Length: 156
Image (cartoon, rainbow, N blue to C red; front, side, top):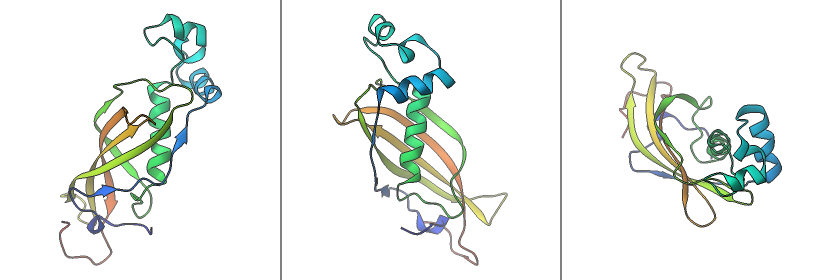
C-alpha cells in the first residue's frame, strides 16, 4: 500500500494488519536490562515468585513491538508516523515468552488541524492481541498526518 494522506482515512475504517511478532525470552530480558530492569522482566525465578507467576515482557517492550507492527500495517501516513500522544495506554494482560502478537487498528476520528490546515489529526485505537485472541495492550492515540497537496475537500 502506498503512503496515505488525511483524506485517505475514514472514521470506522479498520486497518488491516500485515504481520505478527513472536516474543522471545532473550528479547524480553535484553529489553528489560536496558529499559525496565524489574525482577519479573529479568529472571524466570523472580517472575515465578511475582504476581505474574512467570517471566513477562515490560509493557514498554509490548508498546515497542506494537509500534513495529503499526509501521508494517496499512496505516502508512505520508512522510511517516508523527505521534502527538496517547489518550489511553493500558496493559490488561501480560506478554510472555512464546506469545505471538498481532494488532487490530480502528480509525476513531479524522479532522483537519485548526492551526495547520495543510495537516490533520487521525485518532486511532490499536489493540495488540496474542495468539489466544486475548488483548494484551490497548492504546488510543492521535497522529499528525499531512493533507494531500492542493486538496480542498474535508476528510470523511
